[in-house]
Length: 325
Ligand SMILES: CC(C)(COP(=O)(O)OP(=O)(O)OC[C@H]1O[C@@H](n2cnc3c(N)ncnc32)[C@H](O)[C@@H]1OP(=O)(O)O)[C@@H](O)C(=O)NCCC(=O)NCCS
Image (cartoon, rainbow, N blue to C red):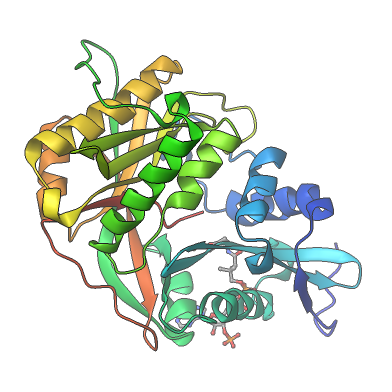
């Protein structure tokens, strides 16, 4: 494709009709960064069409595309979890990188996320990606502790999972649980709300959620998805989208119960591995995960917008969640 460096880039909202072009632009952008030695796959396949549509449904006003003439050259998704919002995936087709599209897409996403001034706004990038970290620093984002991408092989004897599952609960019980979990999440970050992930896993049949109860009230949960976001990858690895315990109820036994719960969701779906992400600053959780047999696969870097609320947390708190798209 010929370069048209003087062509004006326009940013517009993403629509469902963009799904296939979005998949192709994103795949092309990330192809050069793919490290086959860190994966069982030689190439990065495109995101599934269903995954693009699910992301779009979660935050339809926070997803944008960059266009030059009729050609899509870049994409960005945003995600809000109550008082926490993050930007990503952000991608510009290699033929159009270095010409300002990434900057404009990033700012469209940040403007959407920062419309609520109480929101902690950030993103996750590769800790070693100087070009990306440089771009984000210039946009006002400040590095946080690194994030640890851990995984556990699920072979061998399984610890019995005893926690109730979202999928088996009646609608009125689920809404009581949601209320309890909003309060529980608020003890970790005021206003944090993972309800969208829990509901999406159920509605889109992506996986399930186990719930820790205390006197009938939901005080913790783990939501695991068992459907790969990538085309043709099937259900080889399950992903913990979020796992959290009310700060007032943190205990070794409750964390073990939640981990046994998400591991059981993965096993039941035939997944051989379970992946999860936690900030290196959550020392208590990291220590328990390593002792349970989780191994470090990759390191990421979360960056938070410096003009909004800071991300402060207790090193003994339990909050594992993916901020990367
Ligand atoms: C990251 C990406 C989206 C950026 O898009 P882009 O269109 O190439 O970026 P832009 O041209 O808008 O802007 C890049 C800016 O970063 C700045 N930048 C680049 N490297 C930098 C560095 N090392 N230090 C400081 N700033 C740097 C540039 O100065 C540039 O701004 P300027 O042109 O005004 O000087 C794009 O390169 C891409 O798709 N990469 C592959 C996928 C990817 O890594 N996505 C992000 C995952 S977190």
